[in-house]
Image (cartoon, rainbow, N blue to C red; front, side, top):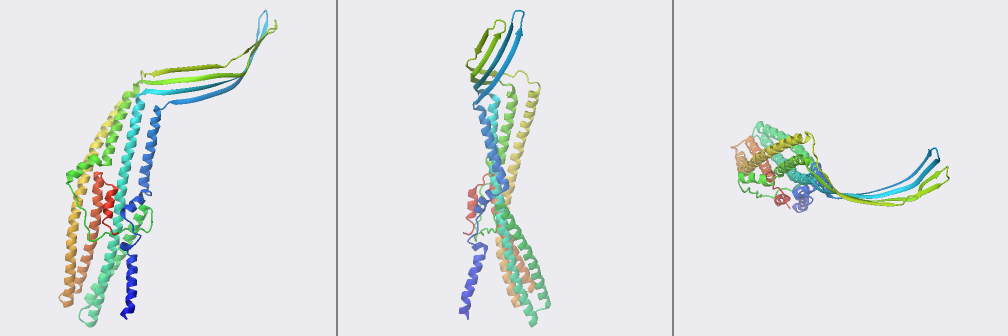
Length: 459
């Protein structure tokens, strides 16, 4: 009989392992899902589009230094007749012609201080949007990582609840058997039944939580039926090197938000220079080539008294010119002084915003740093608590079997063990996410950090 059941049991075990998330051949890594989210997330795509638009605007400003060349052509037909009378004779004149003109003109800016400042401003604006794109990329890394490990945490919670349900069901069955043979009271059975009913409710809540977390990850990545890879245990948690002051110091150098504030200050200074340069002279080189042509036609005049007719035909003409145009604004009213006061005030505001951003960023980095160290301590404490809870459960089961412990003691020990397991798993995931958040706070988060996390996952 055992020989006929063994192949079926092995087949069932292999099937269950194939369906388990940790053993799925189609499980996705963290870096893979982040790269998929780059092409789907609307916030990141918006930042990318703003960067592309600003780059195009910078190219438009650069065109201010390119020569402007235009070609103009005209063709027209004229007819005119006039009569005059004097005491000695009458005269009639008539003019008819078809003429055309073709002109080529160009203008080249030689010096324009406002154009120079506008070009610098456009370049700095492009750099500002690039920093915004970097910040959006780092934010997407953290959001995908948080959603990724939220799914793993919810999945672990459901597995722990189901394992607890199986253990409670086993304890409930034992309590019923003991009551039937008269070795225990009905109290043990009712306590086990109450615990089992509670675990059923917890399983429903855990299943719903997993469904929600899976949906959030699917929405973020733009794919469905995702199966994140589980952590490989035993887990070697990444260590946090350096002090809080060292991490805080990195923010001033690498954090995109701080660099953006510096760029905004540069832009404010450029606006101030623009206000000062409003009366600066401009110098341009201009030139033109023209040609007038008359394919046919002319003017005819006649003296009605003498009978003399005179016919005149127009000839083609050419023209050319070149010169330098200097424009010096002499008076612009009070607009310039008011604009200068405005830009100086905005420059001062931007400077204060930069200082506030530095302080807030450094404090935020320190907060994440201390939180990460706290999580590292919690992980060690939960690992110790897990071992202690397992020992406590084993002792209570043994005591229940020999009659020195009651059923509720075993049930409470089981609840404590699986609750500790769930908290330990959540603390591990939170530590991994906070490790990435610390690098984001310092501005050093990169795809290589996601690759390091992938190294901790099952292959």
